[in-house]
Length: 137
Image (spheres, rainbow, N blue to C red):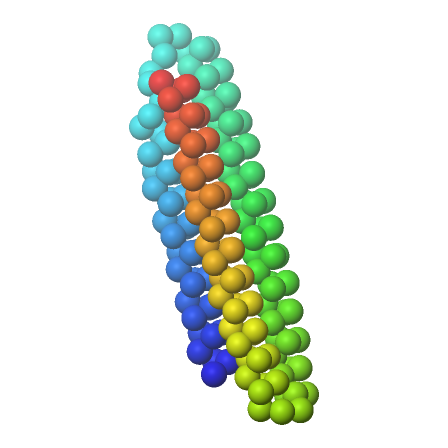
């Protein structure tokens, strides 16, 4: 029973990480083609340096937020493990059922919150990248 919950949680985590890696690869492959050539070399270098610093800022913020999400996910996983071991301390079948149902609810709620946070972060990152790219053009 617990193996299925952990397997589903592992699959969801792996797919979200894969999606983020693919997203970052696509964005980074699009970046060099978006910069328009400038008339003067000095102006072009200044613009490229400004874009690079903004790019770095956006990427750093995105990675910091991802680290926070992973930390939150690990804390929730540890709490779930602690609660799983407490299921064995139940005195009656009804109490076992109640604790297991609560574990399922907590696990799925945690997964839902993680997915919502990732989608919000994804949207915010797209907005920032779009803003950065449109200002560069």
